[in-house]
Image (cartoon, rainbow, N blue to C red):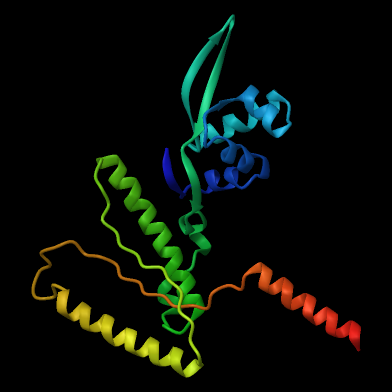
Length: 212
């Protein structure tokens, strides 16, 4: 089982988005039969079997064992991954093109870049798995709080200068490339507000309105 699988086929994406099938995929992180699943999710076994066949047809679940019980053979299945992402290639006709939004201050460009990353890294993972090789990647994720918008702008400017310096230092740009080409994406965006903070703010506003 993979940790994360990227779904590229439109039909597989459609199959995975059905609420019942999503629940089945979540339950099948651990192997189970249709009978066991039916008990867990409260549906008839025949209906569970119908959804399992659709998921198996699209490569989202796979057979791990067959158990013989009297005259019946029980099939035990498992999801092919613990989590799934749908690649923009599943919506190829309407997927965002980074070239169209090429502006480093555009949130739409950030989304287009993120979508391209999901698509490309998904294909790289699949290729590395098929070749039984490790995929060399690197990522940084962190939080930073800016006191002012000016501080944020200054940080972004310095970050851009430093990244450009490192690219100039290590990029093999002289003549035919001798190494493996890599993609570099650096992103900065506001963090989402925590649900509790939003709820507290809403309650505070409601309380003030009631005091008026």
